View 1 (cartoon, helix red, strand yellow):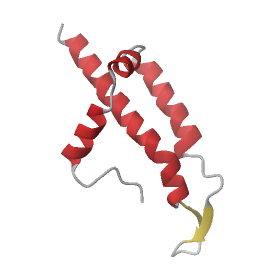
View 2: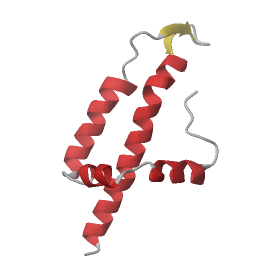
View 3: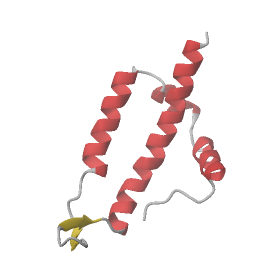
View 4: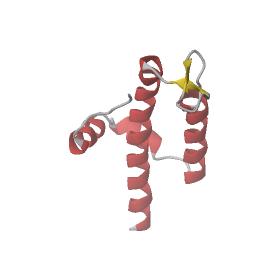
Length: 99
């Protein structure tokens, strides 16, 4: 099961501390539409890519993908990065609105 950590503040602090000034500058460029399309592309290529995953039968007898550690290991770095980008981009929007 994909987890960033149990303590929300600790996770937020860790993500925030890993953002370099160069990352923040890069991530804050563009428009909200650009950011949404980038997130959509990441979702298609990572989150919705179920290739290589096994299938299981659910309680209704339906075959469904089983997301194991392989999926988590592929998705977790993207989740961390997207959360970090979201924080930088929200700060950008708020700072621009309060000028």
